[in-house]
Length: 356
Image (cartoon, rainbow, N blue to C red):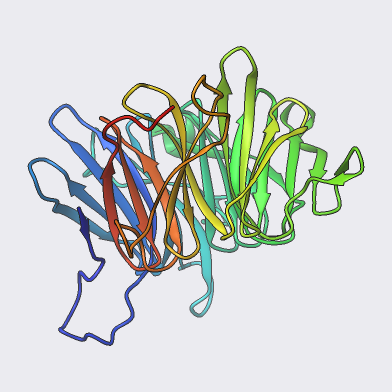
């Protein structure tokens, strides 16, 4: 199933469709609901009950683009850009709002650097990670990373997220954030992956760039790094996966940054998600620049080696996007959801045996 992002159409077929940048899943007792964030400045809530999608609600975040939506601990987190009322003119800043989904009519919690700086970042919020339910890591278009903790005493006793740390190091937009034990991993359009020690005030411990070598071989990405994922491997520990516009997905040892695998897709990889097939085998879903969706298995089996390509979905033959696949999110019952530059959300269900 798919639907377009043409919500405010006035029968203008030449109007540019806004990209849908992110998708998040909210599992309620009644139904599976979907949040999408778009470059038209709206997040939208969709009900999947029945055989068709119904738009339940949409919210305008102030005209700037939304880059990330996340659902965790029954909160909706939204990272976006909007005009700041505290600055002259129409200056855009990066903001984060969080809605308690148990009380959706309550005003959202707003992330502020300081009472006199009522926004989260000086530029659009481009990446969010929720850690343990009460800690948020955010990154912005200008390369700054911030760590926030929930404190019940904040906001006059109403509770809120308080800035705990600011980390500088990336030269361009932050695209991915994952925490492995005490290490914060971050990726960026500047082509680097950085590892920060959270026990040492966020000190940068290791940088992976195009010039990083191991055993005489270059192991870093050669173009913008578009995202990170952490994955637990049975009896092997935690690994971090990175995707890049250079076409490669690489696997790194989560403890020390050692590169353990690298696969080329001959097209820039924009988004990733972990999922499982009907036999409960872990798989990796990938969205690429020209709209295809690829799937690889993650662990070696008697039938297939690790990182074996299982299938490719394309708009020409099966289903896919026209333009970059901006986000992928795994859902219940072997479903997954993709959003793209073409303004569409497409829903797939994995059926049958994938041969692993």
